[in-house]
Image (cartoon, rainbow, N blue to C red; front, side):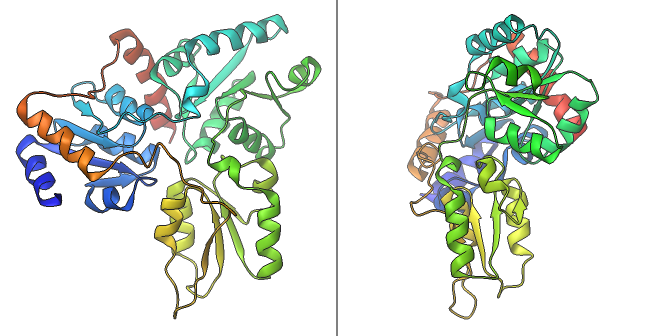
Length: 331
């Protein structure tokens, strides 16, 4: 099957792209693997006319936005639970609620885990997109505008960025009007279903079991977890951090299981890399795509019976592109 996939890739001028959280069988055969920022940038800059993207829907959209001349297909258009928590209608209602509170001047930042319509809405308000890898840089840029920041959809990333900058945060719909008015960063009430599995008690458990263990987590984790960690970073940053450690150093990682499992290389038969969860933190939608799905979408393209192609309204794509390009410029 892998040989047939490679044969069709060459014939159809296809770049096969996979996010770090994909199954091992997908990562092993992909031409390009990475986190959201790396994949958006490199995929859009590739010379291939066709992209087959193994990930979740908003990721395929990001490539299409940045490179509209390319044809982007997904073996499975899987949904990101966080991205599904907000759409353009919920965005508009959030802005209306802020105006009801008397907040008329905001700078919106949308996490890349959002659909193209939301990115377009953010662009209309002169806002920008961020990823977990560049969120700190984007926040520095946003703070220069001296406006209240509306961060969406991930409340945890927004709250963690606020703490990092010694700023006050509040969550729209959860916190009181008074707290919203007092906040520097107002967060939308969204979250990652996988990273919500990690608890501060999990960190305490590993610290008690191994006194010298290091803790590395993703910034989508709850603030109570992030505050206890030794390192906080995106998927690519976590990989770099763990790989640079002395092989004898014990480390526990709080992010999606597929990625952590690939980092778990025993040293002299002793396991030194652990998963920060009592349950398997596996993203169900990232695990939907199989090798058979990849082969199926390539064979359909070869027959001229394409499906799962990412198509966007021109107006939405143009607006969303401004916010994405600004992100890349600032990164």
